[in-house]
Picture (cartoon, rainbow, N blue to C red):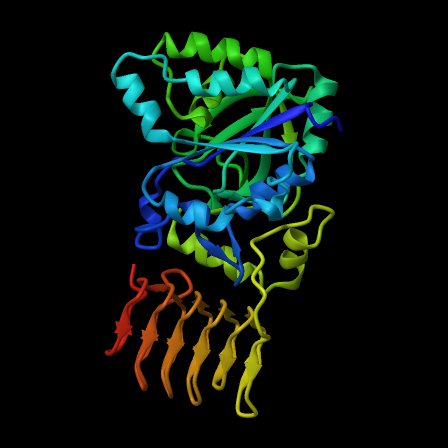
Length: 383
């Protein structure tokens, strides 16, 4: 692939209330995943694997600090070389310019014009997957439409009102797009739009110029979703692992999926490598009294208690006699002696005092917010 052939726009500006309090101080993009990753690692890795060397990233200004802390110079995704570049823009600037009657897509149009790329890919972080963008581009070129959308057949119970469902004809083109809560079809599985698009760059520039003169949505994902209604669009079926993350239960389940070997390998060990920020630390220490069953631990942890079906992030401590089951523990957490934590998510720097019990359910895990010290039992899990 020629390095100038495709550029990327990465942006997930939707704020999912169902993910609070986990996204109170960070965007969805930097939510920790599987002990050492962040959700943004997956779209960034897909972009790097496709040899795309120019990225325009759009974030909400709230919580953007954690994005910059994680990406840094972009070395892990080859963004720090002379031939590569990335640009960051705040979504709120689009809103301000639109409110003032200014051409609010001008920054994107300027980027696209200077990119010299024939194709543009747009994607976000809420659809957790490891997609081969080169394969999508190949299909896009073969079908020769202005736009291609990626979809996956998903069970109805894994869909939410935020999702859009597409219908696909025998020729591989979309025939309709609807919000999930407006779909009357009772089929067990539906075609979920993954909000990943490949478009002709020149066509996109033309559409953005027209769109900003006609009060089109400031969100590019919404904009292209609407364009599917009047533009012949190729539908590319993705068949790999996908988790549709938009609330705490879906985030919890996506992490728990990584304890299933088949799902873990389907996401982490395909031809699509997944890159994250490197941190060289000492290995995790397991004492002679520890017990670990079907769990994962990142580096720098001290495990003296028991773990069952849990994910433990960097530099966390589980002391002697403590029991952790079906739980996500983020970095620098401490679980003291004889504490019991089950079906829960402990955010960064949480401390659970000795003997305390925290208990939720698989459907409604208890969330302990960042930096909290838990000194009394927390029993949740109710609908």
